[in-house]
Image (cartoon, rainbow, N blue to C red; front, side):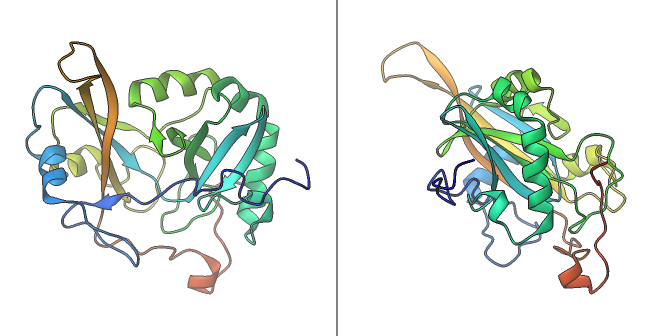
Length: 249
């Protein structure tokens, strides 16, 4: 990494916020989704060209890995270099990314980034991890998300973990998603699982009047259980020593 590289290499956030479904626990700065989005994701699709993917929501630090000029950079959610973060967990993330650089090079094309959850440190959920501490949930270029099928295909090139798939197809109610999650989900949570994310994809016409179609990600919404307390295990919140889900050997 060169000293001349900007602290915010992409010039934008690595990842934005996802709107909440009705009944979801909303925190400071969060926002609720539109009624129409809630209906499409959980009740009735617009037509056969909608596809709804529902995955377990994980609770860690939102991070990104970008490929720029054939180099790999570890980023915080705000888009800053992880190496400049005031938090120890992000420095461990930076080192882990560099140790796994070839895996990221196998997945990413120039200008792309993987976005995911760094689960090293317990935030509001403790985990007995069944896998490595990074779980990827999006592959993006700028503000554009790659569709789920392509994300799965691409991340397999680096053998990365993705959030457990609960459902794919027609709309899924919140109650159905919570039933599928059960109490602790599928990633080794020791506390009740945080919730789920709905990914709505649309098979749209490439141009009006044409016949060719392509899939794109239309929108994402999420549900967080009402009893969830953000960051309750973090040292600065609890006043207790940090709890690690994973530590480098």
